[in-house]
Structure formats: C-alpha cells, structure tokens
Length: 246
Image (cartoon, rainbow, N blue to C red; front, top):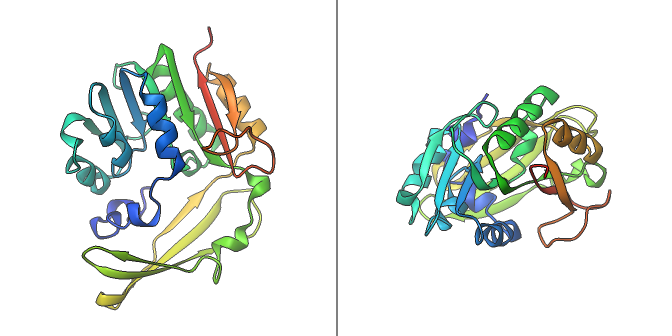
C-alpha cells in the first residue's frame, strides 16, 4: 500500500521540507561522480536524482505519481527518466554503475520476502563494476519515545501554504515487529488536519547482512552514518556500501 503522504499531491509537496536530504546527498553525489549511470530506487520527489543528471544516464523509480510529478518539474528533471514502479518488481533491462535506495526506504518493505525482492532488483540492475548503497535505522539505537509527543512536535513553513505543525504517534515502543506510526499535519492557514499512517520494519544488521548475501551481493563497508563512520550497534543507521562479488 502506498500511503497518502506520498500519493496525495497536497501532502507530497511537504516531503522535502519535512525530510529533505542532509549528508546523504553529498555522500551519494560523491559516489555518482565516477558513475556513468545511476538508478535511484524510491526516488521520491527526485531532488537528488535530478541534481546528478548532467553527463550521465539517470533513472528514478517510485510508486507514487504525486512524487514523480514533482521530480519531472525540477531543474534537471527533464534529463532523467522517471518510472512509476515498485522497487520489489521493477525490471528495466538495464545495468547501472550506481544504485541508491535512501531515506530509509528499505524499511517500508515489511517482510523478509519483500526485502529479498528489493535486494534482487538491485542485483539484477547492477553493472559488474557498479556499487550500491542504502540505509536502514539501527534498531538497537532507536528510542521510539522520540516518535511521540512532545518530542516529535515540529513546525515548518511551506512557501505557498504557510505554517505546518506536525507531530508523530506510534502504536508501540518495541521493535520486534513492524511499527505503525501516524503523522498529524495541521495546515494552519487552512485550519485542516490530515493524519496519514504508515508502517516500518527495523531489521537488524545481521539480518540485513544475511539477506544481502542471499541476494548474491557483497558489502565492502558497513557505515553507521553518512559521514562514513563505521557501523556499530550504537550507530544511528546501518548503511551497506557494496557491489556484485568479484
């Protein structure tokens, strides 16, 4: 299921303000410098993919048409190919020098079968000398109290829709199964509240490592954040940087 904050055009335009890119943008851009072709799985609004289109073949894949509409309209967006598709099943009959799956998108795949399918997509589209990278949150480092009020309360300003108040609620405080969370957006000028819900899985690093190996992929480095620090159970993220086996 694709949830409303991705498919509703009225919510999709909040995405970059609320989430945005940070050091992952620069990290992936540096990887792309030596890549002649890039596949961005779960490209969202295409902010990063559109930025690296000069001089290389770029394809962005996302299941949400509302996100892809924003991507197509971006500066540089006309140079990319945007594909509405599911990262578990999309097949482009192409190979890429770099495949990225960022923004913790790996966590929206809730079952081991779904996670295997996504990794199979990466393996099927990676060039012999290509690299892949994705991120997922480290469950041992998670504190779900941060995903509930008041810790989750935020406010940001949309350029045309004005102030947006946001808070998140979760259904549980443990990570032994997928977590349901609801984002409550109050659009102040419209005096309207929308509350889309979503679910996330939190696989452990050993589980991710096993699934990567079963997909026929190899990891060169396990990172714990986008500055390049090595992974540990206390690291914020699990970030495998890998390739096809030699």
